[in-house]
Image (cartoon, rainbow, N blue to C red; front, side, top):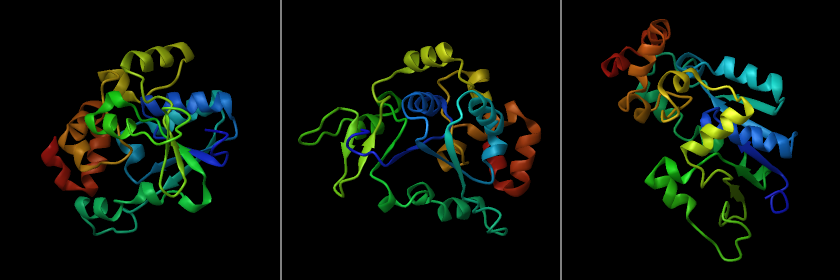
Length: 214
C-alpha cells in the first residue's frame, strides 16, 4: 500500500478495530496522517477524550480531529434533521483529490455487508487487503480477516486503551462516534443510560426524542 499510494491517510474511530489499526500503522509509518470524525455528541456518548489522551501519550500519532458540528450550527434542528445534514460528513472529511488512498479498520467478521465489500477483487491486485477504485484511489483494510479473538489478543499484547463500553460489556459491542439511527435502534442509547445517567441527560436535553430508545 505504501508503494501504491504513498500519500494516504488512516480514517480511525477509536473503536476496538480502529485502535489496533492506528497502533499498527504508527509502528510502520509514525508520521502517517490519521483523521477522526467527531461531532457534538461524540465525547458525551463515549469516553473518547480519555482513550485518545491515553493512546497518544504512548503512541503520538499524527492525529487530526475533524469536528462536524451539525448540532451547534443548527440549534433548532431535530435529531433526525442533524443526522440528515451530516449524512456525507465521512465522505467529505478529507478532499478525495488530495490523497492517493486511505486505510480503514474494517473486518469481514463485522457483518455480511462488510464481508461482501471486502471480498471484492480487481485484476492485478497485489494484495487481498488492497482495493482500487475506478478513479485510481486505493483502500487498504489490513484487519479484514481478523476476528474477535485476534482483536482481543492484539489489545492485550500491546495494552491498548479501550472505550468504557467495551470494558463493561465486552468487545462484541459495536460503537460509533455519533448517535446514528442504527446506534439508537440497536440499544446504544439504552447502554448509555447504564454507563452514565448524567451523560444520557445531557444528550436527551438537546434531543428529547431519544428518550424513546431508553
